[in-house]
Image (cartoon, rainbow, N blue to C red; front, side, top):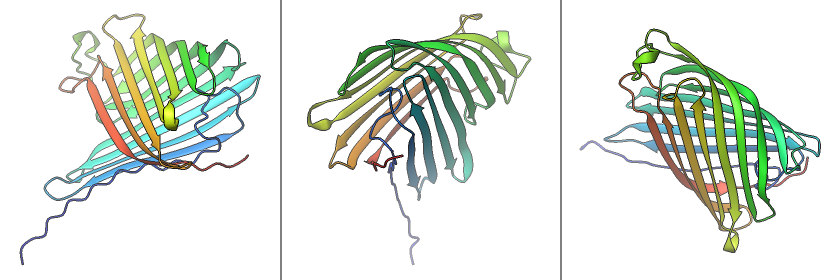
Amino acid sequence: MRPIRKLFTTSIIVSSLSTAFAQLNESDSISWQVKAAFTGSILDGNIARTLLLNRIELINANPTWGLSTRNDYQYGRTFKKLSESDLISYNFIYYHPQARIYPYVMGLVETNLRRKIDFRYQVGPGLSWNIVQNQSHVVKLSATATFESTRFNGSTFEEVIYDGSNVIETWRATGRIFARHQLASKVRVSYEFWLQQSIQEKVNFRYHAEASLEIPFSQKLAFRSSVRYSYENIQLIGLKPFDLLWTYGLSYTRLSKY
């Protein structure tokens, strides 16, 4: 009997929301909202590849205070070898989030196996500006000042000025733009861009871009595709400075009251 080779791929996104597409990024007065998303792909046969991406969000806002936490975890194996075990957690506390310009405090925690980042945290204050805010369109600009500490699994960097220690600490200035648009036939488009620059070292910068498209089939079911690109100029020697990820599948929205 000849060997059986199989190829199986799947990509699916399942989301559970308390208010449809109402993140604090997008709407500044909401009750408690929980959103969970799962994306996965499995490839077997000539190439064995497993990739799982999970996201959990918790959001609350009122006229005085708001908070949001988004936690992304990416797990991957290639030929049974662990290739991804990456966590990034974005946490915000907002003051008067319905104002045209409002302050906040950001806390970020990150680990990244591919980039050999054992642990990173950032914390600091910022300001957000609601440029456009209505039912169909949202555009925001934000600026944040943070202190950052990163512990790497190694001490030899592409930028030799950081050689000799596995910990890099710096103060950063972060600029961010976020936008969400609901187009004809209820097609939804969102995108954001981050630029983080060290105040102390010109070569120490990174940027992140993300965009998504949702085309609804019904009130609850939609086709979803998203692309994410990140670039980090400081990395251990031998590693590439960028990562690109494209996912596509189905999104499911469930409404409930809290």
